[in-house]
Image (cartoon, rainbow, N blue to C red; front, top):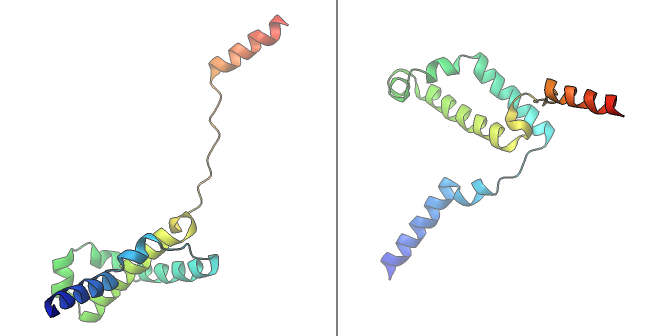
Length: 116
């Protein structure tokens, strides 16, 4: 019986650490919170964090101090938060252009108006 309780507790702790129940139910953040997160993300990007990350996980582990590894972890969490919880995924607003009317439609309209 105690083994069953131990396994059950381990499963609950694992789910709590992973955040499985909260990930699917994450709410969208308001504009002010997103603006703060985006400015923090911009600071990370300006510090050259992507250059360190492009070297690969083994290089990061072997060549960066533990603070550098923690900074990369923080950036990845921050980036995911901005992408999945901010409106537009943190990217620029996309304006959809109207599709241009084809020449064929223009010709058909001209023919119809000349027949009247």
